[in-house]
Image 1 (cartoon, one colour):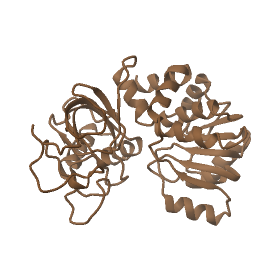
Image 2 (tube, rainbow, N blue to C red; image 1 turned 180 degrees about the vertical axis):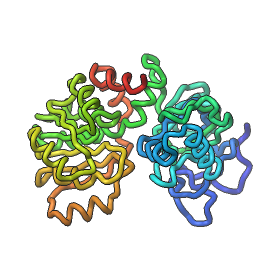
Image 3 (tube, rainbow, N blue to C red; image 1 turned 90 degrees about the vertical axis):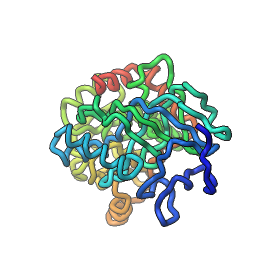
Length: 348
């Protein structure tokens, strides 16, 4: 296809694809332009699989009482209406893998036609068209087989899929690769800290535990919601201590972390349900840091909650981008058998 014949000049962050009347970034837009023709700095991907972020999928699952057909229908409706996948309740989306179909002449991403890639930017800002009605998806898992296309902008991020890993495994890791990279950076700022990870048995949580240990944590504590997950995390060896607590119960979380050697110098929140801010704050020592990676986090609740209990803690929003984050996460998967075992178990 030839580049778009348009008086609208492309912008590297995708402003030219926003169809709202207001001047907003694509992530905040109500609808995006999904035409397949490319502006010169864009790339079009033939989509093979979506990965819905955990908070979004769990919300849809709860809303529809586990009815996969209704979950699938809502995902199709959201994408058709908005030109992107952005859960209206959680505000989050996910990511995708596919094959490069066309590259604009001025694209700075370094991609070539036929490259297998994972997009490392959220589906909430990625123009997306689904062409197969998600016929091969049961609606009961975060990974979504899909045929369609997506558009990357000049300042989008994508990684070529590794040849030594199955595509679904690589997708699961790359979906959360920002969490271990930022965890490592924060841990390195302390001298042998205690690190607690809420949701330590999940994808981002297990990678964060592995990254914390590699970055110099003296003690790692994994907090999980039930004993079955605790057994799997203990078997992986990723945490020095594993405790069971409802992350939504601040008193229970504080007691569990303290019983395992806390309070923590660094607390990482990787839980995909709302209401976990208080427990994370109470579990963190004065002068410590709380990193919120869950898209279910209420940042007003976190800020006001910390103020209300006079907690002298630094709170960070888990930015999904850290330079080199994809390679770091994939290296953890390759080098740590515990991480790989947990990921493969989730896919099974």
